[in-house]
Length: 316
Image 1 (cartoon, rainbow, N blue to C red):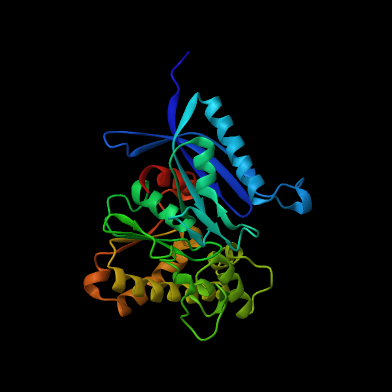
Image 2: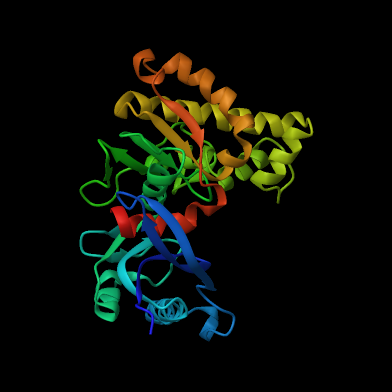
């Protein structure tokens, strides 16, 4: 019988879907990742009671799917990384009522997987997990100081400082989306005029309605309109780009990073946003800091989610 292989396991807990990924790290310092196998499943399948599974049921499904992947690949677990929306307590391994996971209140995720699989397990929020992945394998590879910005449904940051993930005293470092940049504006993170309100997919859709676009247009719809030459759509992205530049100037002046790597809407529409952002950065930030900082779209593209929890398992 062939000897069983050791695999790192990445678990991604999402509001609509979850994923289990098996990976192997090779190379001199185990920094080259091969994704061996992967499975996705809905967080709340249609057959669930009232359309929603209990957290314990979701964790049981993770354990079941992980066992299947390991068995199919003649494997045993080496270390587990879990990526989940915050807030959470990474030191105690507890999920603390994320907005996208109703009912997940003080769920001891790390303890559960420790007991099931008998190996070390680490937990981080999804922005931090993506930051580690982009730092190790993507656009931020080779840097010592890097910021990752989600710019998706919401806006959050993962911070790599002096070659280490920085999550703060209570795992709330990087919540730049909560900062208010205008007295009024699109609603994001519970605040009108916040950076999340101006620099997220939902915020861009709101901004479009505020500027007279039809209800129901998404950030992608507005981007398509901007590319087609619609002046109102272009104005939406100009405003968002300028607010992004203001936010980046703040981060650059405070943290002096080598790179800011941005995902989500920015990765798809950087040419609509970046010129306006760069104008503001040139005007607002310290020259000594801005000239050493690159603003980049994600390097891993649509695969950043596959890499993120595995990156935690290996490096966090």
